[in-house]
Length: 404
Ligand SMILES: Cc1cc2nc3c(=O)[nH]c(=O)nc-3n(C[C@H](O)[C@H](O)[C@H](O)COP(=O)(O)OP(=O)(O)OC[C@H]3O[C@@H](n4cnc5c(N)ncnc54)[C@H](O)[C@@H]3O)c2cc1C
Image (cartoon, rainbow, N blue to C red; front, side):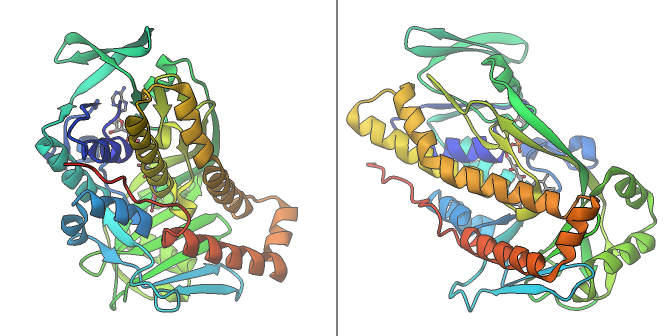
């Protein structure tokens, strides 16, 4: 349920095994049917955002045979420069020092959507139902039955495993009676593209400011993709500002490393919250992606962490098939979650703490933040975390071999 970045990626991974039948139920029409003329036409998952893909995520796309095409639209990150507004502290990560070709790749979500959807349409064992919805889920013996609405008619589908991947405001979660803890960050992200007056040299900037973090990622056509997290009032002012006023405010907040900007694209906003599902596995069901854990984008981990979940889930299910264990087996699914718990915990904690530390106007926190030691620790901690996860060393993303 949900054919966004995570649901579609999982479907593609599972479909590598021709004996597996996958049905993707997606509420929105496929991206090819949208002409992207306005924000209302943007697919909720394959929209204006750009995503920093960790090498582990690229590795999954590579094994699906999709990376070669996606790579044409992706830009490698060679350097990440992490700074704090108002202090001299700085942490720099360089690909050559880490002995990797790139610290990750930046791609616009719409391209990932196009490649994933085209691929799914060509998989003979994938049925892509879009637009479609699931109106009910119930157990029947050791299977799950989904009532699926397609073109105004209802169809019952029986399956050993339903995967709920319909985003942070998950309807699927509600259908299963699984609650979620939602903590709004009282911030929104402004997303747009800006053009510098010189070459970006594959440099990414992560900048902590008094009003929230901002990230600038190298994009194609010498653009930088901006994700600027701010309180709602300031964001509203910046959304309403003329282009030159927006550019001036950004240059001021982003510091010297951004230099002079000549152009800004169309701006979009995204509300930010930490959403944590109270359960991620049930008999015959797994909750995945933003439906399981929607994070602040500060550390660029939402999709990357979910793709590590996808890889481990696919490994778990392949092993179960070899051993003749049903995919709905609760012990099996609990085992998957157990394998993922530590990485999920570390990533969620890291993103949340970093956001709170750099977004809170509380005087004590401000004092602590600006004290050299905490700043040094935070920048170095961010460096270690980003380097480890950007390079995909933390979790194996190797998909199981498939007997063709
Ligand atoms: C500003 C911003 C920048 C980000 N940058 C990064 C980054 O650099 N790196 C990174 O790793 N992550 C990043 N993220 C996070 C990343 O975008 C998300 O983790 C990712 O989109 C989650 O994908 P998903 O498929 O779980 O959910 P979604 O993208 O929300 O997709 C859910 C899908 O389910 C469908 N759906 C909804 N309801 C139903 C229903 N009832 N029935 C069927 N289908 C339904 C929707 O149409 C959609 O296609 C960023 C997020 C934001 C907001």
